[in-house]
Every structure is written in structure tokens, then in C-alpha cells.
Image 1 (cartoon, rainbow, N blue to C red):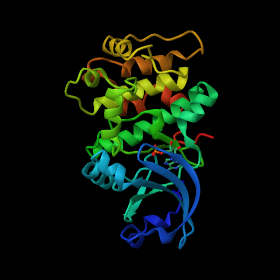
Image 2: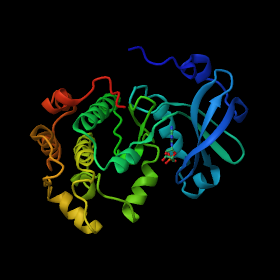
Image 3: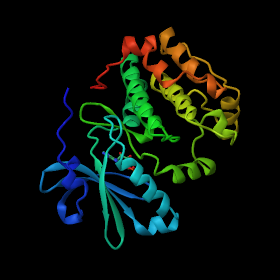
Length: 285
Ligand code: AMP
């Protein structure tokens, strides 16, 4: 299937000096730590985008200027159907604006919370999409390190898009150590050891479990207990919902303490559970 024609990807637009006058601003889509996100229409091409507004005051306050700039450059160079596009950015006296691909169906997390848990077909489709996006990133020597459901959005066809590509790493890692969740972190990260690409493979195991059971596998009352469960890989599969042994096999082969023994991204794509259940087009309505 040909990808959707996107006028903002054209050479002349990617180098354009954008300003707020180029957009009609629509309804707010949500708010994050650093600002707000609105749906917007680029006036010349009538192309719908999401405009993320970040207040310079916040950038100063959290000292994320260099990080933001570097990571925006990374994200704008990633072109993959399962990675949210960053088409460009501009700023005025008080704000920085990011022109982002619009994900019409919003956060995957909301869908998961609404349904409780996903079907094996839907879960496998998302895991395949994520695996392909991560393989593309790893090829470009980019490690995401911060994949979690709130960073996953869905487009109008239900296709998964990794959002906040890395540029929120600094803020989220801070949040994690102070009051956030450890649930998605690999043992080598919670133990503060050196880590590599295999942290993303671990996270795929966590997400696969959470898609199928509705809760992450090492959830606990306190952070100390979650920490202990991750370190011991204290993994168990509840009897409900009833999940296929193929799915459990994939999860068990990703949630492996020794990072060099985790299933590779290539092997995930060939895994029988993925072959049997995933829609290779990534569409999930
Ligand atoms: P963030 O500041 O990235 O955490 O975004 C805040 C909220 O805005 C998210 O939780 C989403 O619900 C929504 N949002 C952010 N980016 C997009 C986008 N590209 N398309 C649609 N909704 C978005």
C-alpha cells in the first residue's frame, strides 16, 4: 500500500521558515509537562497536524535546551511508518512550537484502560509495529530507552506511532527516580549498570505482557517491591485472561535478566505468535 501523500514532507516545506500564521489552531488534544498540544491545519496545504507548544520558561526551568534541540534533530530525521513524524519547528518570544504528525486515535494507553486488555491479534500487531520501528532505530544507532504506553499513539487507522522520541528522556528519567514508575525498566537500568540496545527488547516483553493482561508484570505496592521483582525476574502468568502458550513463550524469551540472551528483534518478527496473530500492515481498527 502506498503511504499517504504528505505535503509537509516535501523539500520546500521541510526547509521552510514556519510561523504561527501558517496554521489554523483547533481543539486542544492534551497537555504534558512542558506545554499543550493542539490539532492544527497548515493553511497552504490544508494538512492536519498536531502542534505542540512548549513554554520557553519551562525549558529554562528544567534546563532542557540542549537536550531538546539534539533530540528534535534526531526525531526529524527518523522516517518510519511507526514513528511519529516531526515535520519542523519554530518559535516566538515565549514559546517553541513542534509540528508533529497528528495521531487521530490518541493514546494507546487510553484504549488499553478502556478495554482492560487487548486481543492477541491486536497485541501482536502492536508488538510487530514496535519491533519494526525499533529495528529501524537500532540500525540508525538510536536507542529509545523510554518506551512506555503513554508514549505510544494511534493514527486514524489504528497504526501504532512511537511519540516523544527520546527528547523527553531527561524529564522522564528524572520523574522515574523521584516519583514515577519503574515498571518498564530493564534490570540493568534499575541496577544502574551499563546498558545497550537490549533494554528496548526487555521493554517489548513488558508491553506484550501488559497488552495481554492489562497490567505490567512486575507491578507492586511499592517501588522497592517492583525493583526487587524486576531484579529477580519474578514473572508469573495469571490464569485469566487465558493466553496462548505462544504468547507466553515470546514474553518469557524477552524478560531474560542476561541482556545478551534476550530474543533479538529479527527473531521477534519471526516468532510463531507474531506470524499467527499480527497484521503485517500494522492496521488495527
Ligand atoms: P505530551 O506533551 O507529548 O505528553 O502530550 C500531551 C497529550 O497530547 C498526549 O497525552 C496526547 O493525548 C496528546 N498528543 C500529543 N501529541 C499528539 C499527536 N501528535 N497527535 C494526537 N495527540 C497528541
